[in-house]
Length: 160
Image (tube, rainbow, N blue to C red; front, top):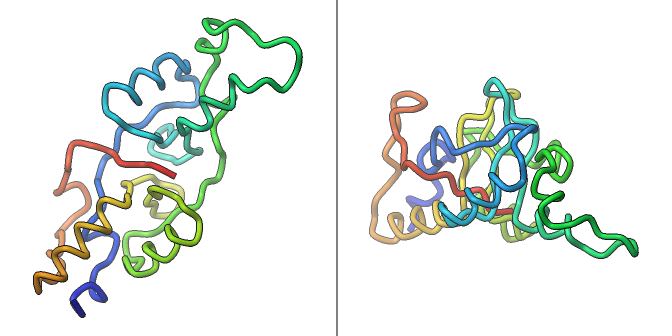
């Protein structure tokens, strides 16, 4: 189990996650959530992380905060930037997975964007941390990735 102490985010994260832009209509965001079973998506443009949008953000758009609620189809045409969470918590590829585990426990985030500077390079999710724990319990240390992008799980798992 001591092998878990060796794991870094780069060893377990999803590279090249599915993203949306700040102008993506909420209808498209909702379709991605449904089709991919995601709870959250990074919002980025030109590789730069701008924020995240979650299913909870989408639900908040429909919350009764006044007596007049816009029709469903009107809300679904809103751009993502209208409901996204800007400047989300992030981690770096060299962050120890033990730190990510503690951050997820403390904040209840389901996933965190992985950045180098402002550039989004991936996502680390609860499932990734659990997989690392399982491998460490089996006596397996991390498998180092030679370069960003060589590993691609084909799914992004951003679930704060």
